[in-house]
Image 1: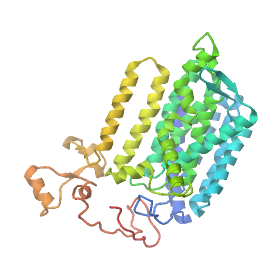
Image 2: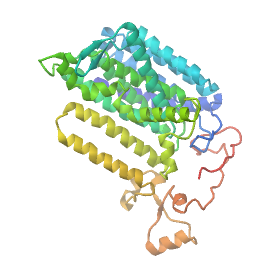
Image 3: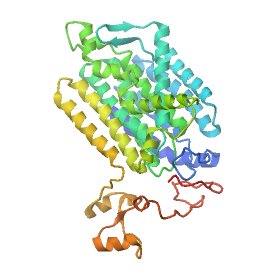
Image 4: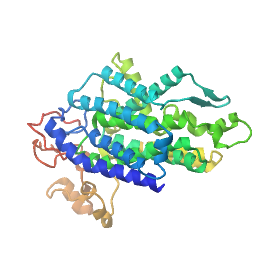
Length: 449
């Protein structure tokens, strides 16, 4: 565990330290596209954050290769090298897309080629555990097609959910955390060495996301772009393939009776991992809904729109930060709920806890105007945008606040007044606007409200 934590911390540190220089490079290189109609941010923000995340991945693999216990993963398995090869290819495609906006079909072909590169080096699904049947061995073509499909689905699911500041990185970090606990349990508790590569991939993925999140939280100073979203999607799918298709359920020795019983016992985790993962159920649902919605309208499945789940949360009245936190909540509930159920599927308390938390999540969805009040003693511990501020004197809100002794929160004044106050335009080039120093005049567009 110490070596996994060391690898995670070094990956996070390298990603965090490189994101600042990468942001400056993105501004100089002109990787700051104009704001589109479907975008939520209001200022041109640089992309190419995936460059820092890729070098964080490389540093994590390099450090793990020189540690005492984790070096055995590289000696006994070719999966880390397969991951690095596929990640380098998908990262290059993402960098080109962030800069030049390449066609969606070209990106899809690049994703399939990256998955094929990993399959050629041994990172593939060898068999499937099916309840009531046992392990079903796959032919080479079946394993290749299933592996490529899983990689492409996971990459596009993460890419589709990358629409708000900090959303994709946070959700993938939560997914990687729950996946790491499950893979580490298989590797350490049951002594199955085949689970070690998946555990390492999850630890590195958590480090990549944690190192990038401080720069990407709202208001974001830099976006990961397709170079980052496709990269973390590929790493997440690589861990799922390594655990699901190469670890023999019968080796867990949960039952001494038969292989079918062992497969049935691992259903809570193995079957959801194939679709492609329980831990990215929210992005996968968003992907399916987007494809159905666009196809029903006669559009291409890759045509961008404002119909994603996070866009709908904003439309019903949730703020940017609250929409991100709600998506975090549902990802954690599904991922860690499946993890807890896999540990003890006979416990009724786990099911009741998941049901109760789901009810809490539904209440949060139905109360978009609910504004939490931070106590006065906790003002210094929260970011400035979450602190209370006194309304301007002489206004109706200020007079009401003087009578009641209450003040509004930063960032919620416009929503509370129904957007009656006009926002003063901010010129590009002023430091502090989304952390970006934009070059040239800012394109004007109507307020979303």
